[in-house]
Length: 307
Image (cartoon, rainbow, N blue to C red; front, side, top):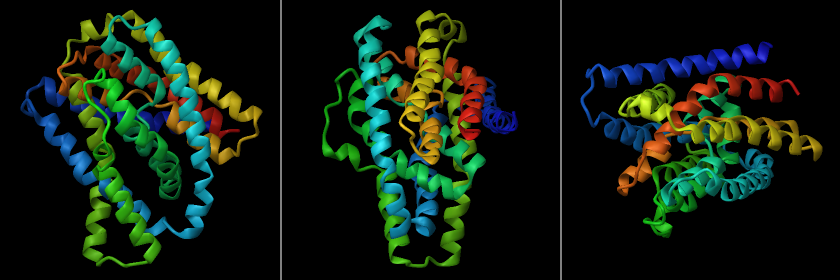
C-alpha cells in the first residue's frame, strides 16, 4: 500500500501538469501552434539536458558493465510486445493507418516522457541512468520501425532516423562520463536546470495536444478501451509473470515494469499528423490510457516494487 500511495502521488503530480496543458489550450492563454514550440524545446533542449546530466556523472566503465546485461532483457520484452502487437492490432483496427498505430501502441508505451519522469521521481537519478540504458532498444525501435508503422509506410527507413538529439546527447554524456572531463560549473548548472524542466513541460505538452480534439469523439471509440486495458494492464502482467517464472533479477523487473506499464504518449498523434494521416485514434489512445494509467500504473509499480 505504501508503494501504491507513493506512485499514485507521483502520477497525480504529473497529471496536474497534463490538466494545466489542457487548460492553457482550451482557455486560449497560449496561442495555437504552441505545441510545436514546446515539442522542439523538449526534443532539442530538455531531453538532451536530462541525458547529459545523467550520463556525465554516472557513465563509467563499471556502471556500463553492470547495465549492459539489461539490454538483453529489454530486447526480449520489446520483441514479445512487438509480436503481440503485430498479431493483435489487425483484429481491432478499421483501417491500414489504425493497424500501424495499434501495433506501435502495443509494442511501446510512453516509457520516455512519463517513464523517465516517474523513475526520476520515485527511484532517483542513479536509477534513471540504468533506465536510460535499458530503454535504448526501445528508442531505436521508435525511430525506425515505429516511425514506419505510425506513418502507414509513407516514411521509409534510413540511417538518418537514428541521428537525433536523444542519441547525440547520449554520446556526448557518455564521452564526458568515460573521460572524466569536467564541465565549467556554470555549464553543468545550466544542464541540471534544463533537465529539471523536462518532466513538467512534457506533461503540459501532453495535455495541450489532447485538448485540440473533440472529447466526445475520442471517448466514443470502443475498441480503444479494450486496447488500452490490454496495453496498460494485461500485457504488463504477462511480462511480469514471465519474468518471475524465469527468476529475472529484481532490478530488471522494476525497469521492465516502468517501461511496459506506462500510458501511451504523443507519437501516435504527431507522426500520423505529419504525414497527412488521421491522428484521432492515436489521440483517443493517449487520452483514455492516461486516464486509466492513474490507477493501473500505481498498482503495477506497487506490485513490482514490493516483490
